[in-house]
Image 1 (cartoon, rainbow, N blue to C red):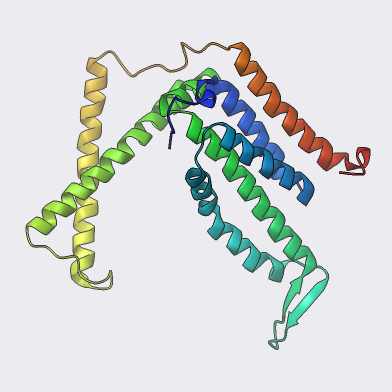
Image 2: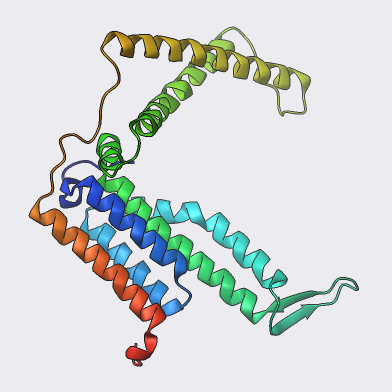
Length: 257
């Protein structure tokens, strides 16, 4: 969720932020050492704080990746071949906990955490219109940008529509039951889903006709211009990505790191 325009990062050209964060994600996905991942995590964490992103927002973003990281830690060490640390004899097959599996699980978890910080910073400092303008300015097709814009806008509309339908059902005395295994609950769920699709179709037709009557959909990206601060932000993020690559690929250049 966009935090607002009261912070310096929200004034940076969205094309710079999108391109730089995309490159950071590519670099993070290739990291294989804990040192490089730790540098990436600390830098992105401090970048979020310096940009005015709240602690609660940062921790919430990291919490989203915890289930995936937990799944990796619980699953990978048992299926990755390598040096056995502990074996659980079950007859056939035996479960073996390997050192390589643990290392892979924690490396993948570190990548997830760093990527969450990078994308969280972009989402917190870039509004929806600016994000679409940046994508359009980077050369993405106008149709793709418009589909994304309408999807983001009408997901909220459809959620509100569903809440109104549920409220209307309860006002008429309908009860959902205690679980989906009950026939009444399944019947009402099917009715709600069907009506939601029907109303979505009708709303889409009205939106299309309204947009056509106004001369078409809005174009994005025509008013963007780079400033000196945009170059500095882009250079900083690109330089840090290069630093991570040098640390990962050429760690022999700095044996003390």
